Length: 351
Ligand code: PEP
Image (cartoon, rainbow, N blue to C red; front, top):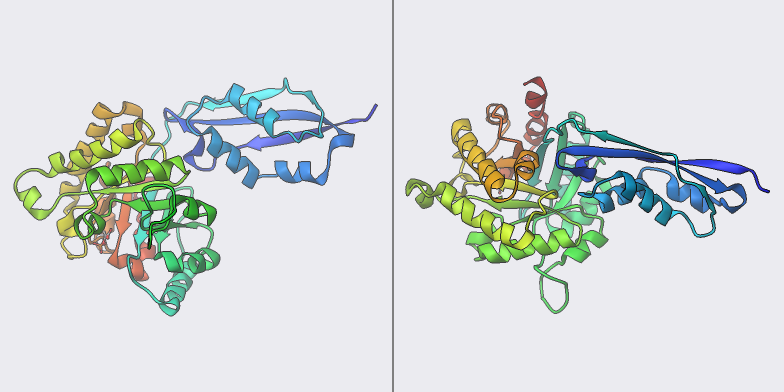
């Protein structure tokens, strides 16, 4: 008989990838393999973080203990003999998961290889708070994504600014969700007001894009917001709700990979920022909408960002508001002050 060897697979969730109803699940699963069957491949495939992360992503939203065990069995290499799988320790941490602050930089249709490289250097050199308290994403143009992805520090993720509504093919000029996934891009911004208003993307179209991107494994920053006329007519919440309804009709209850960005159109690129009170008022209403129309859990867990002329000068006051979970930043994301905006996350920790 061959001696037995113990392989410990540690599934831990550094991000809310494995959360359900505000719970974070983590399991330690002990698998015993026949030593003769162990190969470098086995050690490689069980060494965190990448395979563990993939497993966690696959587990997202599902109850953990039995499933974790099932997955562990499933990923065991066929050459290995699974001798013992009873030693499952599942820790269900029912502590409410706080919404991690989120700062996105939307670089829009800006940049050259030279200026984008400089911006990456600036971001790489900046002192930023721990990823334990802030999630940071930047969205360069499609053509600059590979450059940014290769050179940017790993604490900052890369997003696309858009993607096609369905599977790629004969759609000249479009980039598909599959292509973004293939490139290892985790996020996509959808429904930005410049696309809704200039390119006439309808609420339904944006909803369908969200659904397709999510179905391919992308996380979505879904933008909504009213025009000045709509605000002055007292229709801010009605308009935002219509945009959310279209998203909900397309994605159903599946909001765990959605970040909502409330971006009043009158504040985007205008220098006219919403006051912290205006932002808080709308964010609280949006959270209420999510509670009433999706679920209390989704309302509690979904990050609602404010976007519209956010700068280093105004971000701290905005960040103090309880329903402001971060920012989507345009103009200031192209400047060194983006670092200060990222670091406004500290306000939440102090609060
Ligand atoms: C944006 O485009 O998402 C945005 C908020 O732009 P700005 O910060 O320039 O207003």
